[in-house]
Length: 498
View 1 (spheres, rainbow, N blue to C red):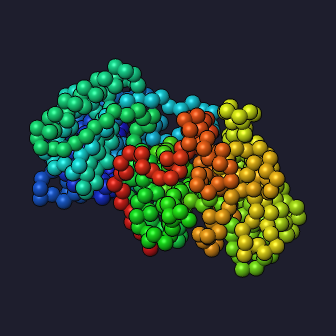
View 2: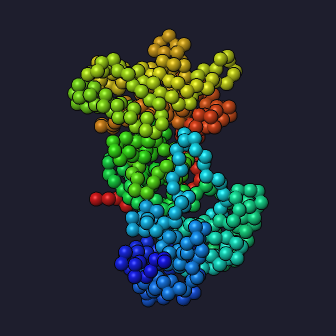
View 3: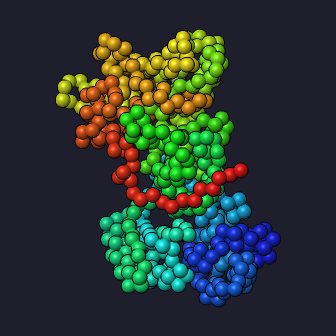
């Protein structure tokens, strides 16, 4: 026997529906996602959200829609379908979570370095509106798409704009794409005739979208925020943007050339506070972010150092931060190790790690050599922490901001000048380790003030772009210097927490 009205009322499910789906548009789209016809469930203008959901759940409990036979042989009544659809929309909601569809595809994907096979791609139609739709427009659009064999997958509406995602039976194929494009044009023609401005696109997806609520964000000043109604398909770059917009320019100062400074997003480990760097082009789902997680926004450092008040405290702090970073790197399946010259007050560390990178070409005109093993000697000078540490690559690497090992003067020296001019007190020393990893993978580099002009030139060529982006998983120089070519950012709501 399925969920009953009395159980839904007693377990506060109806109260949660009234809180999450509190207007006509969201109610209609939830019913459509649950494949429940409106029929007698149309909302009266005088009804409060809770009164409406009491009425709707009572009607479903009485059998307004026929039960559905599931693959496992069980039967799902209309009330079960409604609550399951709401839970799939908000998988992080503690009240609804027990009623989510089992084995749904909204679980975060394995990390990119995992050998498990990614879920199959499928095609979906996204329709975006410049302004939020009224109730009748939503109803007409849903009926129109239903006549074309499309079903509603996700509603990402806000106060000022809307986005509805539809899908059809059929995996990723040319015929499916062509069919969706044809339907898309027909839908846009109808909407234009009704005076509704809209755009659409057919995209590939390997998961059914859902809301991350709650998702917490730490700002560069340790202030905490909660992102409201953020879809799992939101790009990491959009989360960065909405946080930056809430801060004064002093928190993200330009570099020495006046160019805007990039910000980065890290997923925070709840056990030790360490961070895992997220790619700006990934969706939150692809990046492995889950509801209830915390992410941290901070200025992108070209290199880093800490600045404790006394030298011994600084040396101990560095040692502990390196130990924590090695542990967190191992947890994220990155080989990273640090060997110290002294067990108590170390002033030199040999850092070893494995990430894809390139070494200098074997001969002029040829492509750089693919490598993955790195050794970096990090020295804490006598005036540390007043001055930054010195890092020197010990293994061959081809990078604009790292001197060649063939140089007579300080071979392998890493360019670390920028952070010394924009240093933030209290910066964790793990930032330097992550910066070295990002430099090796060409996720972090500067073209205009580097040590290796040949590598800087190569990074801007078609060959360099291909190797950096496709083989190293790095960033093109356009991405390093801004997000000019990125798709339009999503509208997100950020609420500061007390």
